[in-house]
Length: 507
Image (cartoon, helix red, strand yellow):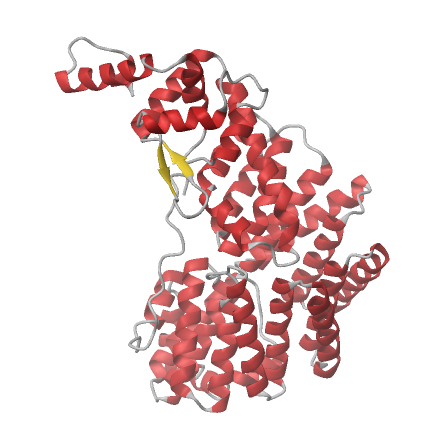
């Protein structure tokens, strides 16, 4: 851009010609077009006509109709149209966009436009985030996918401008999108950044952000980080006297992590019961169903499978009646695992296949699907279908690698260890068990007796003194190395998974 703006006389002719061409094109614009041309550069990657009107003419001071100006800039090749067939998006070549940004800076409107841009995208995220509980609108999530660069720009602006409250609220509002699309890592990084930023912010905004990062960490299997976030968020709510939906969500997350990390079933049960009582009083059916789900988990982990099924079934009925599609799928997965422990492998398969169909229907490409796929692997294994189990475990691992979910990956590694053990590949089995054990230990997670029983007698063989070296070698593998080793077996029948997302400049 320096070549376009500084005009050094010793520049090569080609570069001076490019700058002159840009200036010539700009000089030919009418005054209203010049204003729009500069303002439109505040967007990153692309923009819709609705966004252009909302941001570039927020004060009604654009000297021309925004749509007329956009059409004129397209006619003059300063904008191009993409997305014909859906909602059109207007894109500038990066060289043109940078020149327009220079004009925006020269106009003195740059900071005001960046604020308007950030506020518009905040309203887009916050205005529809409530649809997540009811399943959400697939088109909304696709719109957010298309606008990722603009959301990143808005979050960057909040950090650079010390708009801490705004950054916390925007990042929290984006959590349902990051969850659904499997952008756990990016979401957590933004949330960590805004939470670390010093500045004035309300307790509820900080609690919402802690809740958001806690659930993202939980879905990645990072239970300790989820626990820290949940405890801090709930403490904020108590100190500030906040009793809102976020408080109940934090209660549930604290209870979940207490159950997972310490097997503190009493504390978990008390928190879930409190959440259930308060949500019923408030008429919050989604949190009521979520509380029932987690109460079922507590019963299940203590071996009270019949009681767990009753609680799951009550939650399922509420979700079906209220249209909570995603939560319904989550409960079906957990019920499927309970049925697995009860020996009803066919029912496990049916429940987990229904859950996958619901996730797919709601636009989930990867996220959450690793859970039912791993369950399906164990159902196939326990039915005696070794080959199908192997394929499912490997599919689960591929999903976990994309999502960074080390906890479910450890479960699938143990499944493949059982397959190897049955085939007489004892050293490979011990390596895989060792790799899985290392991941569990890193997450401070231990197996319940019922879960451990599923892995016998192959776990016992892998623990034999003669296999200590192989176990130890497996335990030193990194997550990526462990997955690569596990997938080095037969992959001929595995479907190829595309990469989850292209890394952003930030990543």
